[in-house]
Structure formats: structure tokens, C-alpha cells
Image (tube, rainbow, N blue to C red; front, side, top):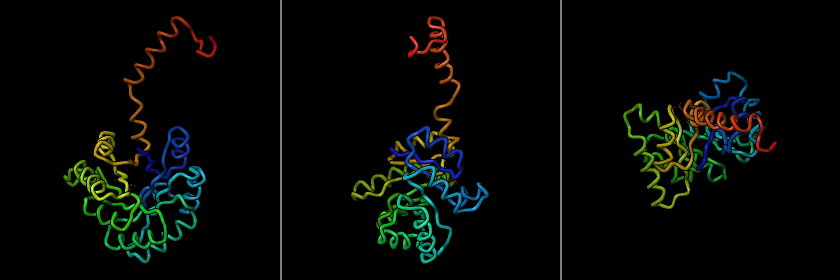
Length: 223
Ligand code: E4P
């Protein structure tokens, strides 16, 4: 099971890659734009922070030729563990095919259907990224789509992994993993929500109170 951070915010990346076992960082043009800063210095700083972890960077162009030019720049500047995110359109699939022939890492993004996942996997994409919440917004059963993709890849022995994305709550994240996604990319807000709430605090504070009654402020290593 892989957890990635869906952010380009340097402070968040620093904090959460040191706290957790994070597989990498994903971005898209919207996420990058939020940082409102120069593109390459931002991406290079992210690379510096995460070291050899995965960095998924999306192309911004529409034709496969232009996508390949952007992919080349992305790979040259950001190194081996970089995944070029390509929208799963007709042009995108052609770009993926060329990139895989060059040995690049590819993430097929903007996935709404199992058919798109099939096409991306057929040209060797390393990951497909189904958009959970965006599918829900279209009244599409996201869990079913992920289950279908998972079955499809299993039946046909495909090595392509499912990197579920686009979450608005933690239930969607868990549903993705339970439906067969091997990886999820999650905002820091959702990641925090998973382990921070009043009930957890209540339990932890109860233990602390009982300990203090007998041992005061002493820690285990001081006893
Ligand atoms: C993944 O990298 C996707 O680009 C991202 O999760 C989309 O999320 P959104 O639907 O919240 O914009």
C-alpha cells in the first residue's frame, strides 16, 4: 500500500515526508499554480526535499509531440524517480507509448473509466490515476470503476498499479484501497484528519491522567 502527498507546498512536503513513510509527491497544474511561484525552482526544491522518492509531474500540452517535449524537460531536470503524468486522451496515450519506449516512468491521469485504464495499461503506464471524487460528482460509482480496473489488471497480468486520486473525505480514500487501489494520493488535510480527532485525544489523555496519578511526570526511561 502506497501513500503519496497531493501537494506542491514545500512546508507540507517537508513535514509529512519526515513524519510518515510517504512513497512520493503528486502534482498537477492546479496544485502547482496554488503555490504561485516559479515552476522549476519549486519542483527542484521538492526533489531536494524528497530525495529519491517518486515525484509525479503533469504535462500541460494537448498534442503527443508537445507532451513528449515537456516530458523530456521534466525528466532531464528532475531525475530518474520522476513520473510524467499524462492525461489519458488519444494524444496522451500516444505520448505514453513513446515515453515507455524511452524507458520513462508514466502515470496515466484523469481516469474516469475502466476503458481508459485499459488503454493506458496497454501501452505500459506504470500507474493509472482514477479520480474518485470527480467520478462521484458525475454520479459514477467510483468504487465499482476501481474494482473493475483492479480485476482487469489481475486477469490480464498487468503490472500497472492503481493510484487513486481526487478525494474530498477519508471514506473515499479507504474505499479506494478496499476496492483494489495499490496507492492513494491524498491532501495533507485528509491525511491529518485520519489520525487527529477528539475521540483519539480523549483516549490518549485518559491514559496520561491515570499514569500521572501514580508516576507523576516521570517518563518510562526515568523510572
Ligand atoms: C492527482 O494527482 C489529481 O490530479 C488530483 O488528485 C485531482 O484532485 P481534485 O479532483 O481534488 O482536483
